[in-house]
Length: 107
Image: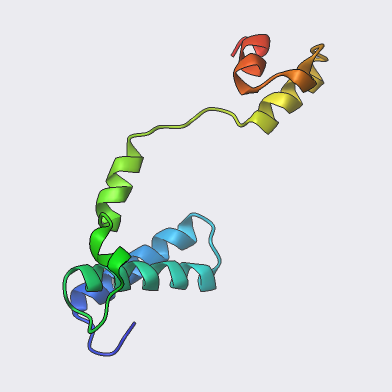
């Protein structure tokens, strides 16, 4: 964390870092994610000396996460569907797209 950070930003950093580690990120990657997120929030709140235009104009990370949280799972990937079609020996699978594979598998 940068010198002079508030206790709130310190807690935010630790929370984001721990969350990233629980998702399976390496400690180094988790620290990078946390630092970038906190720095962006500091810039948006006017707590940093410099800030990029994108940091100031983009929606906040909290809002972005909230919007994404309701998207739900998109189902199995194309690769997963293709592997299942191969396992079931479905004819013409190599020419099918994701929707066609779902239909052929009855998913």
